[in-house]
Image (cartoon, rainbow, N blue to C red; front, side, top):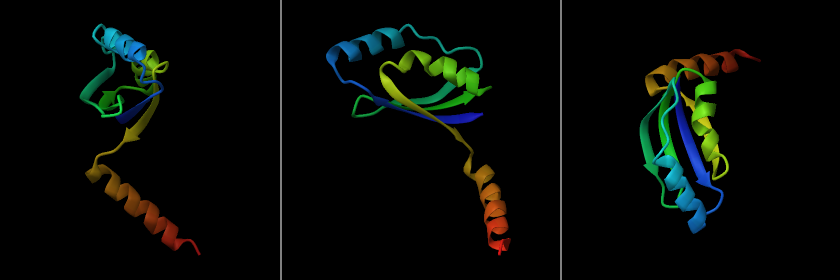
Length: 97
């Protein structure tokens, strides 16, 4: 499964930022989870794109971040995958009278 994960900082104190850096430099991706892209944001947050075998793998990967960030993992579908889904849904919605 593909996920886009958005992390907004709960606190931008120097102590919190120091602790996040300390933990991050020692963190290892859990089994079943791989970051394919990871970006820091100007507000001290992050955006990640990850492949995960399950929601549990995402939960394990994000658990250490929860004290420092509001973490929002969003299941994602590639554009070529989501277009047919949306077309089916819109077609169904238009058929309901």
